[in-house]
Image 1 (tube, rainbow, N blue to C red):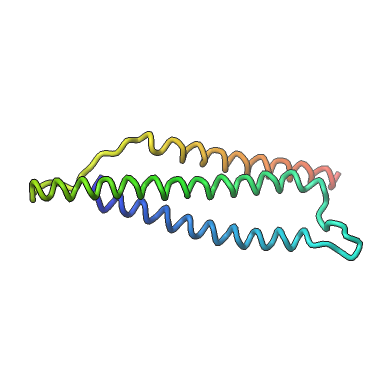
Image 2 (cartoon, helix red, strand yellow; image 1 turned 90 degrees about the horizontal axis):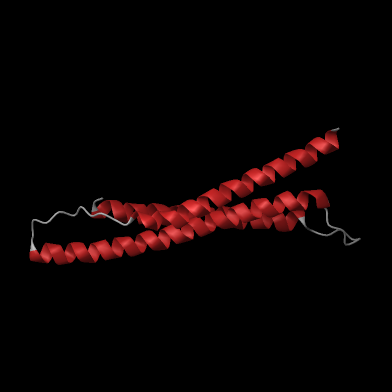
Length: 136
């Protein structure tokens, strides 16, 4: 991987993290609005839908954790490779900016990715079952 590709990877994850954070903030506002109370102090959402909501929130949590991890990890890799490149460039002006990285850096991201997908799938299955039960 070239040094510029490491930087692009870090910047892509950082950008994605910002977008997710913004979306989660809007989702949080929506959830607060859904849970507003009436004069009788009753929650306006059916208790049966709280369980799938928990999985959707967990999915969003794993989503942001995935990109927090990737942003930090790839920034560290980029900075390390950038310093290595500068040292090699000082010793040999014709040195290449091609570097290898340890692929174990991606394992936590894949775990978080799998967990977020699983949470959303479980949330939708529960939601589908609850809606199906109400129809029949």
